[in-house]
Amino acid sequence: MKVEEDVAGPPVLMLFCGLPGSGKTTLARRLAGRSGAIRFSTDEWMADLGVDPFDAIRDRLQMRLDRLWRELIAHGHSIILEDGTWKRAERDEIRRIARSADAITEMHYFDIRISELRRRLQLRNADLPYGTAQITVDVLEQSVRRFERPDDAELSLFDRRIIHYG
Image (cartoon, rainbow, N blue to C red; front, side, top):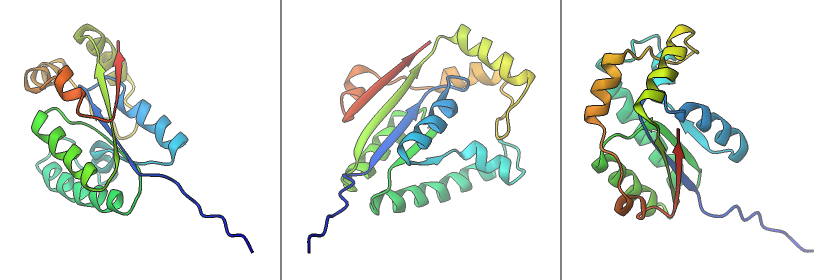
């Protein structure tokens, strides 16, 4: 009797890096549907819990979700982290954890012009989809100042790099 083994290959960690309104959630939903990867969106969890997206509980929730995705990837599940990962140190740590689970690391960097982000956020704020926080121009400007844009050297540290322009 011949038995075929199901070889799925290594898990993939798809890390999303970009500012609000750059298209992270739209792409994450599409990729999750296609790949079967488990999608993590802190904003959606906050909405499900009925909590303001800027509430202090966000940090505690983020820590819990971090523990969960780490456990899942260690067990061979592919993961999509769509929270934006604005800081280089955060991206480095996520990549290190994924590599320790023998996962393929895939960076999706959303390099979208600020004028385009403003336009998209204006449209989004007029008719907010479920799980989406209203982002004002002031919040966007603060986000831009805090965002650490990945450079070519950092991008080269990932197994796969996909840059989304707009």
